[in-house]
Each structure stands twice: as C-alpha cells, then as structure tokens.
Image (cartoon, rainbow, N blue to C red; front, top):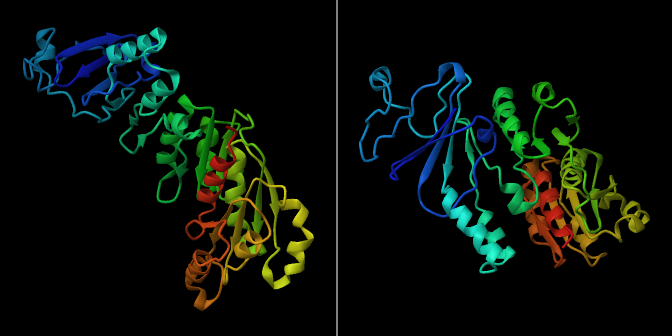
Length: 337
C-alpha cells in the first residue's frame, strides 16, 4: 500500500504498490506531497498529517490512534519503506495541462517547458533529480568524490530506476564493485576514474567531438571529457600528446580535428595549447587547464589564467581538471537540433 498525504490540502489517497514504482508528474502549485511505501505485512491505516483540518487526528482503529506521530516529510522510515518528497505535484493540474494540449490551447513546446520542472526523489542522502534528463538530455551525473560506496549505490539505484544510462565521476574500483551489484553491464574507466552504464546508445551528436591533450600527463582529464561525451551519445576522436613543446605533432594531426564540430583541449604547465588550436579552426574550443606542472604552475592556476587571457575568440574555459564539465558542454553544443 502507498500513502499519499497532501499537507495543507486535507487529502489522503491510497494507491497500489505498482503505482508507487514511478513518481507522479508535477503541477505548478506550492504544495508538497509525501509518498510512503508500506510493506503489505505491516499495513497500517491511513493517517492525516499535522496541519490538516483535524490536526494530528488518526483515522482507523484505536491502535493506530495510539501510535506516535508520522515522521517528518522527506524522511525514510526504514525497512522496506521509503519516503519521497515530491514538490509541486497535483494530478488534477497535470490532467488539466494535458487536456489543454489535446484541445490545442497549449502547444507541445509550452507543455514541455512546464514539464521540465518535474519532481525529485528525496532518499535522505540525496535529492535525486529524475527529470534532469528532460531538461539537459542526460540523467543526473553522480560526483563520487566525498561520497561512500553505499551512498553512491543508493543514488545510482534510483537513477537507473528511471533512466537507461548512468555516469559516476571521480570514483574508485570499490564503488564499481557496488555498482556491478545493481548493474552487471556497468563499465569502469580507470584512467578517467569514471563508471558508466550504457543501455541506450543512441547517437545524439551532430558531428565529431575532438579531445586533444597537450601531454601524456593530461590524459586522465582528457579521458574524463571523452568518456562523458561518449556516454552522452557522441562520436569522439582522441588526439593525445601534441603539446606546444613539439608543435609539429599538432600540425601532423590537423586533419584529425579540423572536421570536428567542437574541440576540447586539455593542457597544464602554461596552458598555451588551446590558443594555438583556436587559431587553426572555426569551431568552439573548450579549454581545460590541468594541475600538471611545477611550483609556479600553482596546481593549474597558471594554465587557467593563461587560457582565460587567450586572444583566440573561439576559446572558452572551464575549471581546473574539469574534464567532465568540458565533455558535458561539448555534448550540448554538438547535440542534433
């Protein structure tokens, strides 16, 4: 059984367990709802939340009335039960929106814009944004750094319940073993320190994304960009170790990146390579400074400042070592319209 409680609206409603497997779409009213999954062997009577017309009144048998107050919205009750806070959800409003589309009063683009702000799932350790895929074309990506394997596993399980693909960045083999329990088809990319699950391999890119690294030491960051772009449905060309210390290597690989629709250039030290590449092509160049270098490089700050001061007007810059961000933005630029 599933309990749906609407704060400030005095409404309770039961749904089948099957219906609880997918969250309801949202409307656009400032109210919150709580879905609470209750195991069949521990079914209890439906209760109203504090703040409804009868305050903390219990509806049902005397034993139910004697129970303690229900947990706060968005908390997990333990066992097989879980709570999910869904902001701005109202089935009647959604039905009205769909009826307006059918009647031609609202066009599909306007309806899509409204539906782009759909609910998230609160699993206590994170608020999983299930509808980021609708807004950006790819599910929420998990940053592994600072999270335990169990936390990442919980988040990944919920993402895969709604999406075909999964991407985890800055992660480890320990986390990979945890993800394999959920998704045996998961892949670990050691150089990029990423985990991917690719069940939908539809090509979304309009052209090729070229990933260029100045040196071999920059490859881990370049691989992070390459794995991200590949996971987002793009064809990727890798061109590594063509830095300015041997500029003839770059000229020799010119035909490999001239046909690209967008280029990611990864470099440490003084960060000169993106400007050189930017002066050779007519497409956007996303520069990624790395923390590779000696003392005066200040862990990538010198490269970052050099790239920010590029005189090539088609060069833009992301943060130090942010291969993921570069790959993601390159994918958005390359997406088929």
